Length: 238
Image 1 (tube, helix red, strand yellow):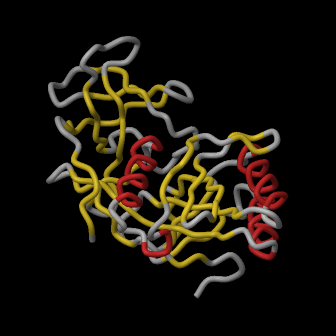
Image 2 (cartoon, helix red, strand yellow):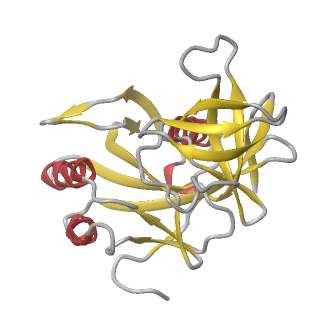
């Protein structure tokens, strides 16, 4: 277990309802209703439920929303749904050498463009480059983290792009589970069976498929890296 990021001024709230893709109505600790932004475009149906405890950051300069919803109570911890914080946590863990299978790599470019897609990172180590795409896996299926929780054409396109370049350049997909206590990652064939098919093809074409797990400890405010090398199961459950 590694402490990655400390979130200051974290506040508990209650979920009232999701208004649209990017805005949730919350009940603050003071008992008033306000709006909170979310940046995770998944359906999050198991989290954005009336009465669920959420964890927010209050905006210093409120605009259309007064808060940013970053996590939801799950399994005695905070399921980290905020994709920006997931990626920031990855960057810190990479820089500190907490991800053993990426030890020595560093970020040389954010949002590199490949064909029709913009990926998340270009990494390098000893002249070896890897194009890396990160996906948020916050759907809990038993003791597994899963992705996606709804059909994702964008996800399919990114996998296809990585398959196309894998013969000439390093290519990797990293699933970040924001859930505490999961034992591995599986694709969610119920939501988008083509994603699973593409991931299996990608692995066969030398695209590395990796996963890690982290969660928010709401008592301390720290995002913790629980498992930097989560097992990936593309064909079957253990």
